Image (cartoon, rainbow over all chains, first blue to last red; front, side, top):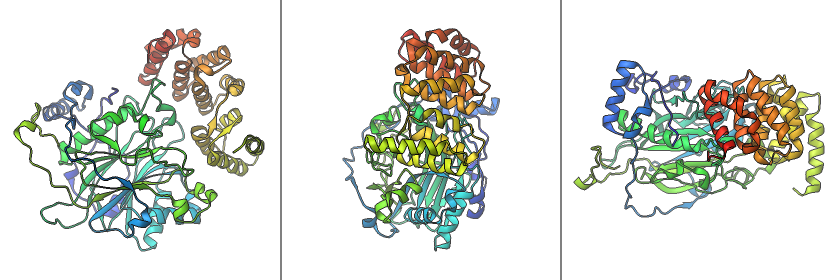
Length: 376
Length: 176
């Protein structure tokens, strides 16, 4: 298993103060943060190491990781059926929808095309949080235009964008946009995974969100962190000697553990254009209980291939309602194939979650593992 | 798309990407990306990855990442680009496409010489890395590049080292 190593902490704590959404929207990455090991003891060692050296060498902590979520849930199969968004209708106060969307070469030129932008705005406004891949041009122009268009149409969206990422001159940024009336971006929660060993062409971006709602029946608003990823199609083959899906499993586990240790955040959702179907998920697909919600549904606009996924740990993120799908914007918005392809060669994959945290069953003695933590 | 239509489209695309007009070039590259299955145009599109026009370069890279199908007939063009182009991005993509062919590369000796040259001399690290990766994909037939790979495996930056070691293992027949 390939491990990201030597991740250097460079960020402020999330508790350093909340900013208004306007400033959050303009906040630019990098906001590098370290993310940590799975065991609490390991976390303490990491912090001590950081205090003395200014660095966290995760490779030294590898022996303390693993085993997370290997227990079976006992929840039974979640009733999962793809649902047309038209059938879903209006946004509900009880649920939220998140989506991942590779808006192919989303830069200055594309964001000046009124028809394309109309479709993108219509699409985005159906969701509460959208993780976007392939933002081009090195700045937030295209994303700002999209958010402005949604907001001019009565929406209240905000965005955050990563620095341009990539090994070659053809860099791209990740972005998240979210409906501020329903979702809160947790200030200082965004960062790009630091990958000093250069194991990924485009290191993923992470951000955390919480549903804006009032606690009901003792249930808190659903909060979650999202890992936004875009793999290099030449580096996802099991036989090529380098496979980014064998790195993304480490990213998932370490982000989840870091968020759990620093903010108590349990729910990690990995989304993005992974350039593989379920069989190609490799080590990412082998994390116990982690699975692709939409599975092998075709996600390209021509409906011939599976590239895009939303992955959760089924034993942890029990807020997933079982409703998901691929938005066929070509048919749903009455576009020709030529018009649809101008929007993107990908279609958004989405999933619905409860607006409230699930009630967790208290751990019993036999569930406590050797590392002292109860299985989640 | 049937073969007749594919042939007609290829002819039109070949003309489009040879145009002096950057706008037409971009338009054609976008058509290729939309179609998702351009073959026989690899060398020309790789050359466009080094265009002076930002938009052309961007769409050429997009086409190469998502739509170009490389064939053994393209190897001569790709080898020539690797040997003669001073543009790092062009070499990066030429090496990538040769790597995609792997041990089906055909003119293996020429390909290995060109990749070894790129690995040894390129000033552009991503191109050197892709050259090492491509040699790994070629495997046993890339044996003449072993001295340069060994050098990269010792003195190269971390990622290049890993790729060079993987290539050496592939050449020796060790599972990567």
